[in-house]
Image (cartoon, rainbow, N blue to C red; front, side, top):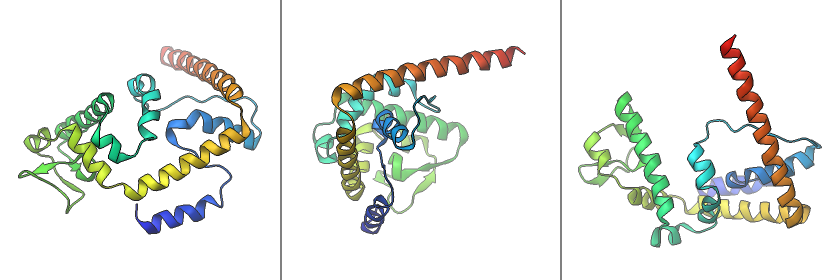
Length: 199
């Protein structure tokens, strides 16, 4: 993001009653439900990496609360594993499809140098194999100073709204209820899908 984006985001926040952050999505759903008067909440997650959704959910909260400079100086092992898994998936897809790689994200290397003049380059197996998870983390953190500032401001505002509306005990109870409702909805959807496939 640029400073102009940051100023625009600040202006937009004044127009919205609620702005959340991805890793606190369940809390956002609760506040949104209260805001619009929905007493029975449930959702079924789509296009979610189940390993990421379950095994790293709490760790991701801790990572996202830290500044990039700290993450790069002492990268958590699990964060590097996550970045590496995403990087490998991207490389595999690009290799199979022979499509262009989005180098601003994946940090492709050409002739030993990180591509910076172009957003994408033709897939090059050897160049992309040479990229490590740490290089990707360093590259991402080197590009997000404004993004990080905007994100941390949004997160702080959201947590203030959350604390003002729900006590810790209330939040815990409602998150547990939402999780149970989500599981019930997902199970019902799976049964319906199986029934349709069998018809």
